[in-house]
Image (tube, rainbow, N blue to C red; front, side, top):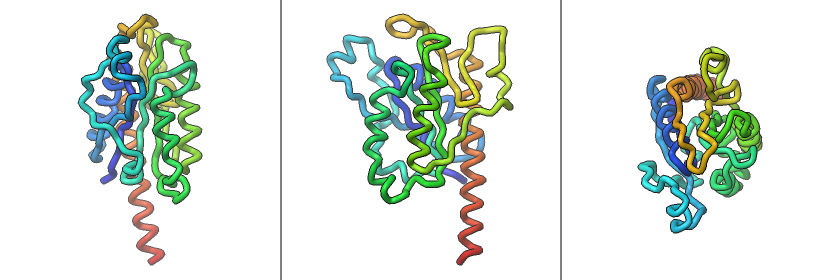
Length: 211
């Protein structure tokens, strides 16, 4: 059984909702899952005045604990086609784990949210995947076996790079994740957990043969 971390940052709750769906998918695959968030960098008075969702239940993660998991699924909103600074700041502190190869061979995956259909969903996921590859992680996306990403009957997020949702391009993103987008998030969580379990099993068998 693999251990999976869903690590996210969410200003207005969209990524938080997606993270919960991802975690549900992980559980469906029979894996253990923890949902944690990265620290907020925006001062509390400004965040409150801007309407940020400050009552999120997930505990704040510590960088050192990343090495405790077989897979890490990162959720980040887009900021001008890239990951949010809160996520980047957290990952930038993983230099010690990188130096000791602590994340090499672990599964990495990404999901996101943007304010519009062409607001940087794919570029945000790809940019985040680059960081995970530098850490030596095995990248897993959202394969086309999730047929919901090919729907043409409604506006929807999701791509082969990862699950995503579209928030209304207004001040606080009034549109919430759709049923199809949440299905994509659950599929991704389940898919990542299955691959992480298979890889962990393979490494265990290899270790037994070598020893």
